[in-house]
Image 1 (cartoon, one colour):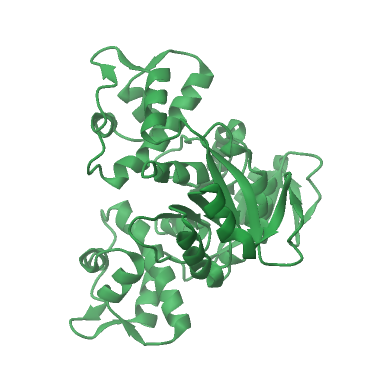
Image 2 (cartoon, each protein chain N blue to C red):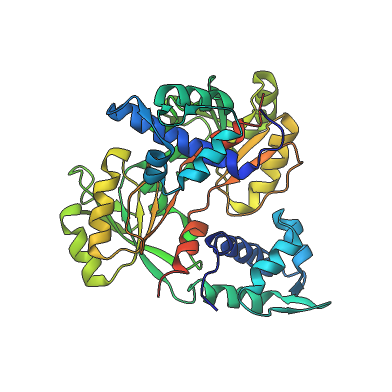
Length: 206
Length: 206
């Protein structure tokens, strides 16, 4: 099951999961195929079959995959059959947008706490949560056993905040700061930088 | 020069560019090496040398890369020696955060126009821009020759808006909608979905 499955394969599973959610919502069929999924995602059907084969047999030749079954299996593989409480660090405009973002619901995550070090932000209400002082962040992470954090602070503050999060026990960080972070090998970081994404595409423009 | 360089290689160039920007700002050295860069980015030095070799010779064995020179070369390769005007579709909380995001500056992009179809948002000021009615979006794209768009609308509206953008002449779309979009082969789409990034990491949590 686990072992040394390449991270790039793991990275495609949430994409499959998202497509299956849309298929289930559309309700047009109870089953799908690697061809269906591939066409929808712009990924080859061979790639999809190979990715899924790392985790077992999910479909039969000719009958395809049961959408709900494959959905549940992927949820379990990704440990999304539970809801992960998330701590959000940074209550600026990105933090604000994340606090109000509806897309976490039913997808395994809930932002439960928001922290900032700006006295003008501390005490503010954001979508029912009160922005708390960074000075009590580490204690909260330890007490609540939080493992997932979203970092929405300026680049200059990102490494320092990362060190604090990691020391307190955070194991997964999604960072909006436009800088690469140093973390120990047991901690995973993913980056969201809209400019990096845009720059990747202008290569193809004249 | 161009030819069939894998998109995954192109995707790493903005990461190198960002690291070089930080190195230049730190001002500790005029030169760097594939080892330096690799350590900072968690990418092997061999990978970095191989990626860069697609585009020519940027450094000499033993002396490494001149930071400013490599920075300028990568900027040119990615067509960032000009500023791309960007149209933002969607003035909700994500659109709002993007309108105020400081990170586009000096990195090749400027959001110049914001559109929404919600009458309560049209006419609002966002960071000096007035939210405009979607009904005039296509005309503006054609008139201004805009090629880059950011899509920050709900999943249900994303494909319809994409079709409109593509028809008007947009060639690069950064989408915040949690859904895969169908576009013709000459159009590039990149996706930003925080949940997909988080889900990719919970695989490694217990």
